[in-house]
Image (tube, rainbow, N blue to C red; front, side, top):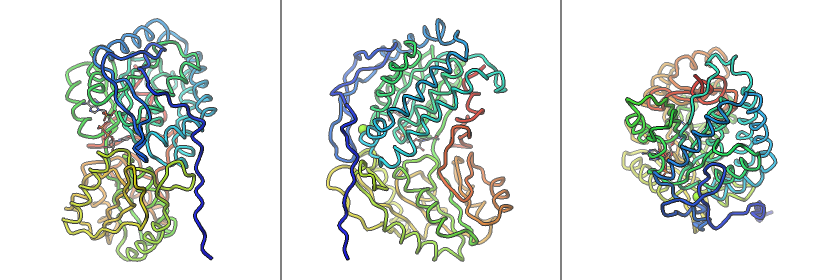
Length: 473
Ligand code: NAP
Ligand code: MG
């Protein structure tokens, strides 16, 4: 019997996308001095809205609003009062969860399954978690005083989630913020601004300035910003570190990664295959901690790859709003071009490319789930971040060879270990130079667990008690 596929699309009716958006400054939506730009849906290339582009003068107004709110209201408010606002925001995120999930899927291209079950619930959880800290800062071990105004710049891969990682701890500690979302994904941040209004958050505590890289530069280099928090590429992170050097700004940087997902021959192979798939195809591989290098023990490599290919054939690529979709659209034409270019280099370098057979939609930006075998350490696809659904497969014979290969990277954000032996997990976790090491799972996040990198993956930790340090004095 042949079954016809029946799509199960989530309705868009719940979201109300306005034709144009201003900046959110001092509790209100205001016009910008500069021009506007368009946010599109990467799965259809449909224009969703015109969004204001903040220039230096706009950013200055936002920083001034944040400064006033800090010195007059938020920085003075007892932690137990601040907590009430954070709890309120967390509850509204839950209440409006479906709206946020649908909007994020449309603007970013990621599957509704993920926005609904990962991005939105974890964003709410971050606000709940840091709401709980707001009146307990004396137990944090990092002081109790706020720093002042935080300038925060985030990327497009987890727009709402990165916003919550940045805003929740900052507010809990009594700071005010000026946040710039990514150019391609501003819409959930603007909906979050409405949520701040709905929660009666005092004006100026949260300011959202939309725009591109220049707006980001204006935020991080503004002289009255006390603390810079950035998530994005290593290249821009380095530029920011240079720009603030010599000032008394505090900085945390969450940058790129090239994580090794290491599968030993005693691992439960079907589970490991699920972990490999989740590690690299979750969020189209647009994940800084993606398991983009598979290191598989030679004795099981053929078996693992056969099972991986079989599993990849079942991945459903397409409409992000279809509840059955596993892999959505690539976020932008620019990112698609980068993925294509690096994949071509992989072929030129002699690695063997295999893509899951799937029909890609005619419009929008798409890349099939892809693996490269026969990859060596010298290949660029083994060293550079691809930030797409592309896995480089390497093999190893001994645990020490696995450690050596896993650590042979300029990055140090995350790693995965698949084995039946607890003692081996501990040994590997100690030996791997990575901020997060997952064992027999991958890409799991919790607000109580610190996240961050070594080496070129940046410095500072977000999440958990550690995440308070950046926002307290
Ligand atoms: P990106 O180009 O560095 O952009 C990140 C953000 O910075 C965007 O909002 C961007 O504006 C802005 N920006 C660009 N130039 C700037 C400048 N000179 N000064 C200040 N801000 C500037 O990175 P991306 O390509 O969008 O994002 C992907 C990267 O982020 C990957 O390398 C990934 O590994 C990393 N990432 C890291 C983590 C982590 O936690 N470690 C999490 C997610 C992503 P535009 O909107 O105009 O680009
Ligand atoms: Mg968009």
